[in-house]
Length: 367
Ligand code: F6P
Image 1 (cartoon, rainbow, N blue to C red):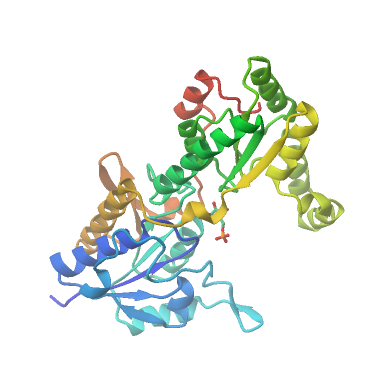
Image 2 (cartoon, protein in one colour):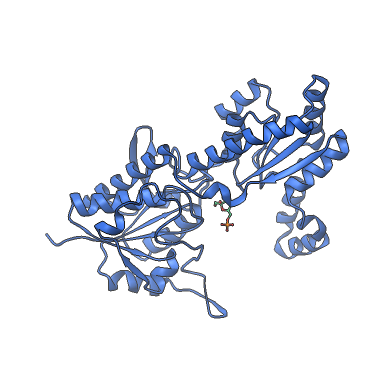
């Protein structure tokens, strides 16, 4: 039997654990199954531009604990890629480069966008396997994504640190946590860090209910509050406005955005702090954690998960089971058809046990 050839790329926002996953696939594929492994630089852009790196033993060694991705990443989509000053469909070029390297499979590590792009290549009859990474934990079909645990640890530690300064100064501190569309990270870190209020995109908030929670704490002698807020959390009013805009279509949406350009420039967390300061007369501050949450050394849990998924990926390649995402299911890994995953997002269910637990310890969700 001829030696199999694997290509690997990492696409979308980086996260801790990507290198552990590359190492997991690469070491198992090379050491156990005698396959050849190459990487494409900077996501789908490297596939289109044929920028390749050999993933030999030395490239795969010493990267388990390394943050980021040794391959580099980008948010480029092969079907809409900026080339010079034009945006072009480069899918056929990507397909040609796959064949140029006589690949048996292309392994794509990424989040929601990557799964959609990878599925476009499945439709072009390429053999594809994906692995779910993102600090947002919003990939459908897997229990959890790698990168999430590390980011949750970073955000929880930030909340711990903010507690002491908020308490000393009797302040409200709004801590903005990544997550435009889903609140897993804010919810997990908020519960672990003991945030008093948790605001996530899935639960539109009422500013009065948030202010009441803060004032209630003041009356009980706790003159500080920590509010964990996802970057995409919206008030009930903003949610209703956004719904009306999307019903009216994109042209009207643009007009509405320019009408509210002052609001567009103020982040949701700054707006919330300003409103709470006015309603409670307590001093308020904002801390935006931003890309800190995506940087640095992966947690042991993420290293373990990435290694499990990576090695399971190599086993799938050996069995020639393609067109799937390697998902975490309990202690095992499961191949989920990409056709099912692409275009779906795992949001926080409103009756999720984490939300119930948080409510039971008195956390306010602003609803
Ligand atoms: O998709 C992961 C994510 O970290 C989101 O939580 C965040 O909103 C976004 O990426 C930020 O993207 P960028 O790297 O383009 O700033």
